[in-house]
Image (tube, one colour):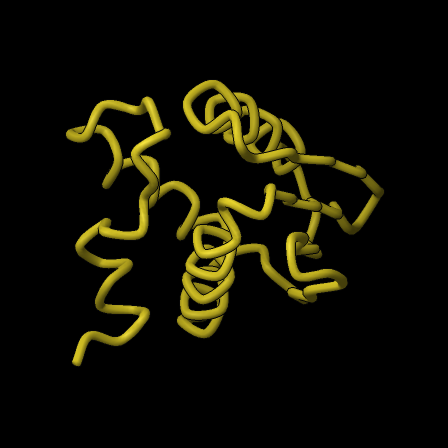
Length: 118
């Protein structure tokens, strides 16, 4: 039986609606994983279709998050990102529609796994 983490490793969870070229997907995932492992302080799921990530701030972190969000929005239009910068904490809300709830589930699991690698 395949676990959620195994399924994420083979990119099976990436929806067909994602327009990022297949060969670029592992690189993008690595960027998100690095952000999560370095900066995630808290992950909550206030609603089934929404994640909230609390990321530790620091020099260049807001710009890094904005860049990733912008690029991700360009290839995966089903994500809605809301960035709330603060001095020491950056809040990143990620929402999807009902059709992409499984993608959000996979992202949440991946985020937790990356955060645990600290």
